[in-house]
Length: 240
Image (cartoon, rainbow, N blue to C red; front, top):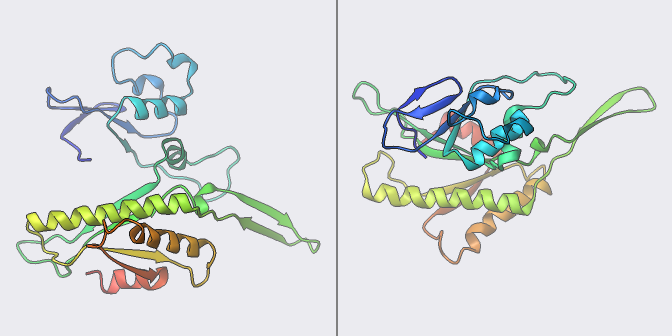
């Protein structure tokens, strides 16, 4: 999805080009007034019966081509009744993939010091994002907190498929347009299965199976894996 030049109105972004019907909702907080979310001059008749979150979700699902979520912050400590708006949107809209392209840019006509051209694809809905925690108190009076970590085969499979599809498409694009990066398309599975052998082990095995069971579709995409600790180190020291 590419953004087109737009005129920012309060809560709504409308395209400048009159021939376009592309519509984009700009969400600044989790509780925007309904009147700021309407895509026309009148609000649908059923608006009165919807909460703000329900209205945002319905408009984004049924009436919009895209959305921009404005800058917000969440408290770093527990606040009764608070729920992160971005996490809620991910759940309501099933926004399971966080896709972040990263590319080096030449400065002042000089080549970039590192030739970086990659996309980071992260699963958004599971792991610790399920937000299942509990606090217990031992007989000694010491408090102990637990957090449940969820990794499923279905979520791992679809995020893996998206990663391979992106790599496959980018490899095809490099053949028809000039780019500084000439390497073969590659998917690196980043995990911590040396410690979390069950949860990350399932993630690792499931993503590998996406390529292995694709009937040769991704044979042109190299697959490798890296422990998250060394991957972060390499991204700083050897980003290319």
